[in-house]
Image 1 (cartoon, rainbow, N blue to C red):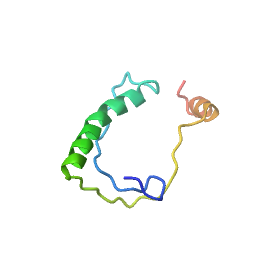
Image 2 (tube, one colour; image 1 turned 90 degrees about the vertical axis):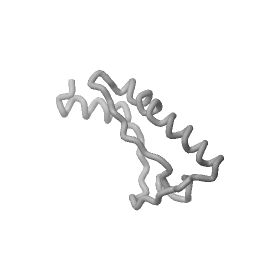
Image 3 (cartoon, helix red, strand yellow; image 1 turned 45 degrees about the horizontal axis):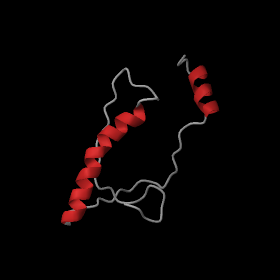
Image 4 (tube, one colour; image 1 turned 135 degrees about the vertical axis):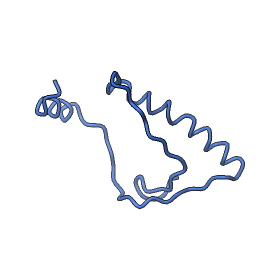
Length: 82
């Protein structure tokens, strides 16, 4: 749910995403979307039926961004990823 904070709104549904060993940074978003779509459909159905039960979470407000190209390269090189 959207509120005044950054990622501080109540949660409707959650699911753990299962990545396969062959998944890469190029496929992660697609796997996440495939996991999220049924939850989105369920949220719409429950909203229409008046069955939404938002759950509050007590996590700090924080912005999350994908790494910059330079951070990605630095991490890959300094941690022996490549």
